[in-house]
Amino acid sequence: MTPPGNDEPVARARSQRSIGLAAILAALSMLSPFSIDTFFPSMRAMQGEFGIDSLTVQQLLTAYMVPYAAMSLVHGALSDALGRRAVVLAGMSLYLLVSVGCMFAPNFHAILAYRAVQGLTAGVGITVGRAIIRDLYEGREAQRLMSAVTMIFGVAPAIAPIVGGWIHVGFGWRGVFGFLGLVSLVLLALTWRALPETHPAEARRPWSPADLARTSASILVHPSFFWLALCNGVLFGTIWIYIGSAPAIVVDAWGKGETDFGALFLPLIGGYVLGALLSGRMAGRVQALTQLKASLLITLLGGLLATPVGFFRPDWIATQQAAMAITALGVQIGAPVLTLRALDLFPTARGSVSSLLAFVQLVWAAITLGVAPLVGQGTGPIALYSLGTAMLAALCANRAMTQRLPTRGS
Image: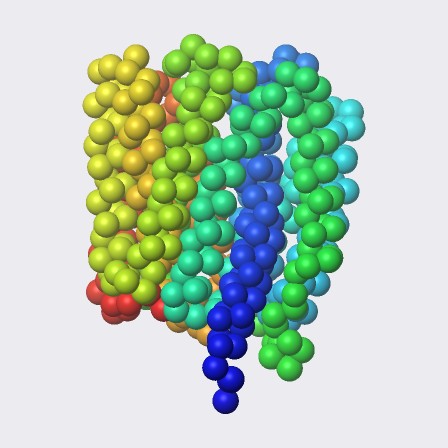
């Protein structure tokens, strides 16, 4: 029996370890969204240097997103077979090398090739990180940590273009890729020093392409997982359309400059942070079903506010910013509930489940980013796309609820 008075120090130590682990996983989760849109402010300059049009430079996103989505199926399964820590370290090492390659690339085709390899490696942190959290924690504590990591994953795309704009002004577009290399070097050192192995050898599963295909197929055809994963991916699409259309909104529609991307992304950051705080407070206090319904209603409200303003009063920038913040708030409240429920469906294959969650989310992100240049001809169509995806997320959630979504976060 624990002596009286010793519970508090033990609880404090456990809380400190949780905070430290959350910080590492959150930092790792930032790399993928930073890779996507840190160079947004540099896109016009890259067009000029290489003599390409806007649709061609957009291939830098496609070249990254397609391998990223495909490899997300593999990261989790590899971590189930080889251990979480080894897979993260290998991914960070390769990402560092290709980031240096992007920095010194002699032509646009070389950058496309290096970007494809970036896509193969950048998602390892967020994919394996979800499995690490579920390896170690349950219930309320798991939801709080998942919420914190999801918040950073959502906030990072909002911070990245702001940082990228200032780096571009000071060092040009090559400096942006140098910055990504520096970030990956810091993450590699942090992972080597402080990330624990949470999947012991005796719990690992042999890996093979055939086994991966069988496991992935069995998870994907599970009705609850399919609708939960689709809801999660589509829900994030309500924000990705704003991120993918950032140059069109900030520069073209709002008439601002390369260092003014904060006008769009700071409201998104505010919504994400507030949503994470609320989600953490709801953990263990509010039924998971109630939390998910609140998330969807708030996200729909953001779209309903943004759409008429975008079409009829695009000069009302503050109102559009408020609508974006509301949308981000709704997304962040619901994402941890969806993620934890999906992970709990297959407790012996959490790495594979995390991979498939990431894959579905990335496929929808790739669709959204691919549509962005066509939709982004004005703030109205962009907002309408966000509203439409919010409605689709609500339909997916309704189907998931019929598959016995748990009544309490767990």
